[in-house]
Structures are given as C-alpha cells and as structure tokens.
Amino acid sequence: MLELAWDALRFRSGKLSAFGSGPGQSRVYQPASYGVATIALCAVFGAAYLVESALSGGSFFKFSGEVLIALGGNFYDFTVEDGQWWRLVTSSLLHGGLLHLLCNSYAMVIVGSKIEKAVGAGWVVFGFVFSGITASLLSVYANGTSVVSIGASGGIFGLIAMAAAMGFLAPQLGWFSRRLLLEWLVFALVIGFVAGADNWGHIGGVVGGVACALVAWVYKRQPVLFRKIGMVGGVIGSVVMAVSVVMAVDWFYSLRPV
Image (tube, rainbow, N blue to C red; front, side):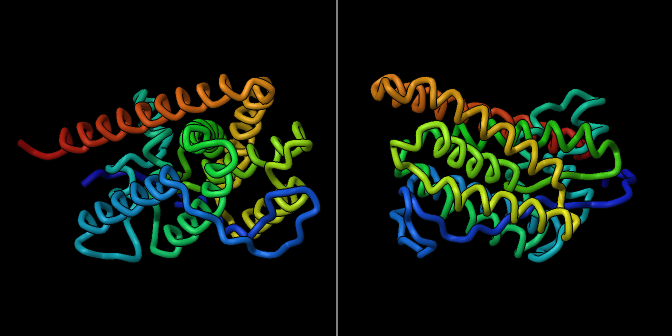
C-alpha cells in the first residue's frame, strides 16, 4: 500500500442540462442519436471504475486515495516530481464514487453526442483528451501536493467550451446554441466553487476546449480538411490515451512485491 499524505481529496464532477443545437432553439430537450466515440469513452470510464472497485475489496461507492493514486490519479509528487506525465490522461478516466461516475457519464453522453453529430467522432476524442490534459496540468500546479485530482469533467468542460466557442466563432453554421452553453458553463463553475470541486481542473478544461475550437474555426471553410484534421486528432487522442493506460498498468504492477 502506498503511504502518502494530503490535505484533501477533491473530485471534478459535472452534470449537464439539455441544450439546443441551433440558433434561437428553446431550452427543450432534443433526443440525440448517441455517438459511437462518446459511448466508447463512457465504456472506458465504466471499465476503469470496475477496476477501482476490484482493488478496493469490492466496494462500489467509495475508494481510498491510495487506490486512486495507484491507478493513475493526478498527484503532484508523482505527476511532476517523478515525471509520470501519463497521469494527466489517466486521471480523467477515474472516478471517486458511483454518483461521480454517473454524473460525468451523463454529461459526456449529452455533450459528446451533440458534438459528434455536428463535427465528427475525431473532434470528440481529441477535444476530450486534449482538454483533459490541460485540466490536469492546471489542477496539479494550482493545487500542489494537497489534492489528488481525478474525474472526466475537466475534459467534459473542454468539450462544452469547444462547442460554445464554435458557436461564437461560426454562428452562421448553427452548430450549437452558444447562449445556453455559455450559461451552463458559468452555472457549473459557480456550483463547482460552492461544492468545493476542483475548479482549477474545470478552468483548465475550458482553456483546452477553446483552443480546440480555434483550430476548428481556422479550417471551418475547408470541410474536407476539417474532417481529416478531426480524424487525425481522434487517432492521436486515442493513441495518447492507450499509451497512458499501458504506462499506468506497467507502473501499477511495478508496485507489487515479486
């Protein structure tokens, strides 16, 4: 068992209200066809959660900090001091409890499906992974050694910010309801502060999402290139995530006595 000390364990969690996908659309829920990449990411969250449960003696509702760190949680001493940068990715796949997992999965399904339907699966995967990294970076440096940071909401905030920024940068395309997305972002950040969530991670995710939107905006008038960039980004994001998971598994097994 790892013997580490920290002052608090905070979670990045999120819950999304329904939002429109076109100019002037009312705040009425519109059923979305669920995207393959979106569901695949949620399946990864679920698989990681089962591993967390197995390593916690079958507990399904709460996990110790030692387990979260052992499986790739974002913690300054390891991420920065020991150079285990893969934790910037793996931490976004872990959750601290069943409610945490369900809230983030729900938000991912709603947000990811909308984005996947509008701009393709590649942009969803790349946007989530890139925003998850920027979220984890800001979190680990802002929180220092006091927090173990986990949860998908940094990447999810990035996806929402990417969609909102696209709405402002290219409103004529009618991809997303920018007003509703912006309202939700502000509301979620306020709730995060009140609830004591890791808002540094949320803000970092927003920064990453806006950066992705800027790249998309540059190529919005070149649909073929736009799709290709999304596909390449999706492949890069998938590879980065897979490599990070492999490194986490290798590190975990290195902890076990021979």
